[in-house]
Image 1: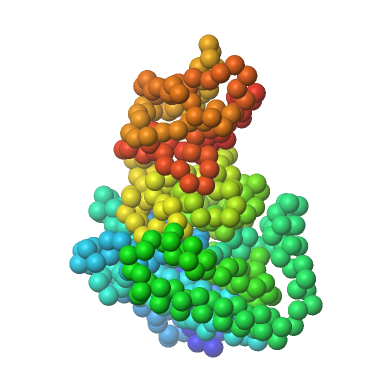
Image 2 (image 1 turned 120 degrees about the horizontal axis):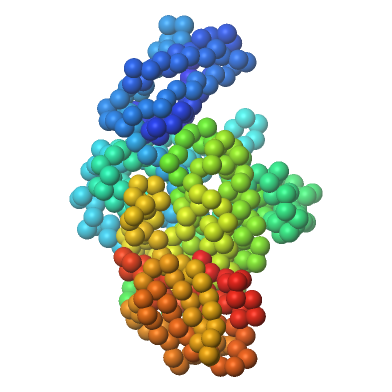
Length: 496
């Protein structure tokens, strides 16, 4: 066995600055491996057939060279940048590619940027007899240009553009996501078993009825599903050709929804812990400035336990990363075409997790969604909000990068007053409900929102449903999150 290096390393890569990071690979037992970069050199001896060298911290830079040597073998990686690396994780809306976005044709000519580099983790579903399925290879890091940009995450690319322009440092994006995935797909079996409710809903319920399923039975179910899906996609293409002017809402009324979910199986990409084993384990030795986590649509059906699920994911990943890597969590936007009404529960959970986990930062995405399209094509505004939150959290604490947060509540003389951590204003039509009825008097004064309530009122809510627009905004025009307030327990405000 010759000298080899972790597949995440290639020409054009970005390494995380200011931290010790690891270079790893395979080699002959007893072989001494030397790693050199930025006038630093560290070494390790191959144990078994694996080696890992710790090196760094490194200073910000472009056009570096990483050299690995052992027993006369030399591997060189060129055009290596040292900057800040972000892990883009989640499901379809962070996977959503730049070429699909609304501004693609207009923005593509401006995409050449040596300061933005991108790596995509192959979406492997399962491994059998030493082979991976599908048989996807890890492609090398790509420098952002007009040829490579179309396949990059749209949200990630716009975010990197904002940050690179603002800080003038190399930005690395590692894209690790899978459309339609539950957070349970990204959590180890060990961690899923730590919470009884999570383990039952996401593990025991999944495997119920398929423990004795054979490979051929699973293949048959999968083939039947794929046939149904392909027939639907054919009808969809014909429909768009015949009625290009019709809305997504009308199309769904005429054709119905895309067939979902796929059948369960032991080789199904969406089995619990499946993507953790097949994808996350590939990145756990890399070092990141932050995880940008945009997920939750698939878990709205169990919105009442999403807080536990997301907390487990953060704890699990931090243990595997062996550091308290920050999480920037994108809350769900508005959407009006789901059969359940639990989107607000997931938003609440995302906010509560950020409030309770140090180093977790929330991005409010209300007003970035589409009523009948779960994959909004406009990604620029959301990417800017992620950038603003990242800038405030990691680079400039005085920057106005977070949405207004409720910091106090009080009731006096028939007025519920909510105090925010910044000045707010009304920028459009709003509807606040008290016990399900629209409140007639709502005023703002500085950082206070005053809501007139009747005697005996039990609950006040704002934007606490699947689809809503938030027009109460703070600094940088960032909208407040939805909230639900139980007046019997003013200190227990559901907000994010």
